[in-house]
Image (cartoon, rainbow, N blue to C red):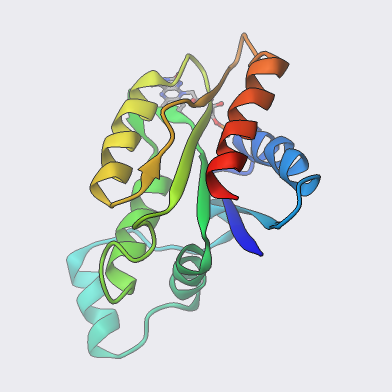
Length: 173
Ligand SMILES: Cc1cc2nc3c(=O)[nH]c(=O)nc-3n(C[C@H](O)[C@H](O)[C@H](O)COP(=O)(O)O)c2cc1C
């Protein structure tokens, strides 16, 4: 049984998109699928000084460990996140910074994992997708060449949605 983790950066439209995606995978065999929102976790703003404080007192906050463990134990990842200011939202950047510092090797949460980038943004979210793909590539993930894009004005076509998820399912199963 493979573990598919869907990470939503927010509790809003990207969380709804995450659940629409989960509905697709719940009908498939050989997979267990979980959705989390990064807003559920109390992740402080990453600074080197704060990390040093945690390391010196041997006390990484529980929520950092929880997110890190969820990532490390996943076999594949789907990311649903809005574009902010032509880039990656701070909640996602912050979570990735902590995960990379809480693992033994900084790539452990991502390396070799099939990953699909999705966005529900004001516009087409293309700057987020391009920037986040670069980052996931750098972290060693295997990022799918297609993305699911929802905008305020336009939902993704149902056929395209099903095609992209079907292709991703083939890659991970
Ligand atoms: C600080 C901020 C910056 C934003 N910048 C962009 C942007 O550059 N491009 C875009 O398409 N939408 C932008 N938006 C709109 C969000 O992508 C949009 O509201 C999205 O639906 C939010 O995701 P959510 O519904 O999951 O919270 C921005 C929103 C905020 C709050």
